[in-house]
Image (cartoon, rainbow, N blue to C red; front, side, top):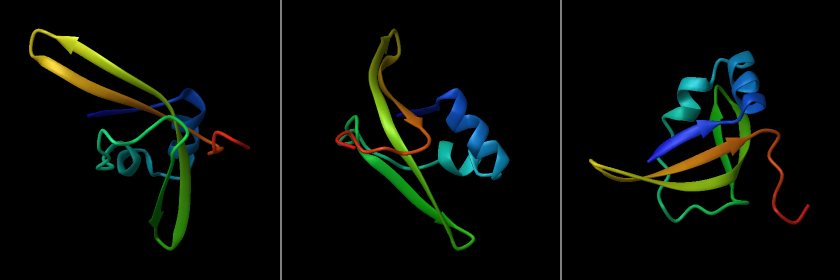
Amino acid sequence: MILVLTTIARHYAGLHSIAETVEALDLNSNCAVGDLVSFVKAGRQYDFAIVRRRWISGETGTTLELTLDHPARSGGH
């Protein structure tokens, strides 16, 4: 699985020095668009939303790409 950050999410992660942590999150293929992804680092909670799922198929196989955005907003709000 590949995690991608939107431009705004990447900027936010860079400001808080958490980009590497976000990109290393161990999510699985059960994640859906609209899911919120939260983690705690140094006592602070960070929240992102899954805004896109994309399957990428190539010569070496198929990979799921999840795109995270910030601020996190659930699908119904």
